[in-house]
Image (cartoon, rainbow over all chains, first blue to last red):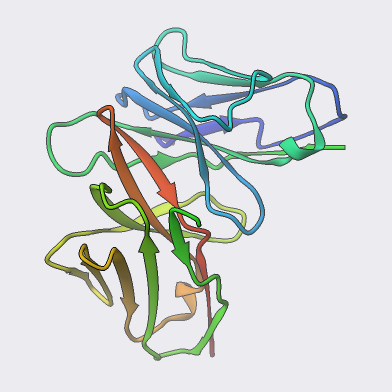
Length: 116
Length: 112
């Protein structure tokens, strides 16, 4: 499968624990995005990488959240001291920087986080 | 006020019907526009881009009115498989990257 993959697909954790999610983008894609989606809402932008550089972070990304893309390939999103309000689907997307129209973002299947 | 607003529905239509979804956006600097489809508990997938001149892809027609900041999606001859949530998406071309802003989605249920 050459699409975007995310692991784990589901994570249940207790409040206060740390969790880490992984995203593997489509191999030639140099742009990687993280979004969060809660029930009944559309995805909300969290952060964006071009290669290994994190170029934009939403104000939704509190100090408890950190994302990395160390070698410009896979990315991790860590949430420290989880809160019940962090329960959501965390979606990763990737795209290829081109000069033309498009730059379609392809989404992974998401990691569903439940904080008890 | 949300940046992208959609009627959440659900829209319940019989097979074969024509259905239209509307969407408004607040940021006049938005550069590009899309409709994404999301099935229940699945990831969003690009349905079609929306161009100023309007565009069609089979049974789907998208239109953009920049003056009114309004986007529409028309589905003709609805199929059972069209049942999904349709997300209106705008791109804020800020600092050279694509920050997609999603609406809440409009849920479509097509019945036999």
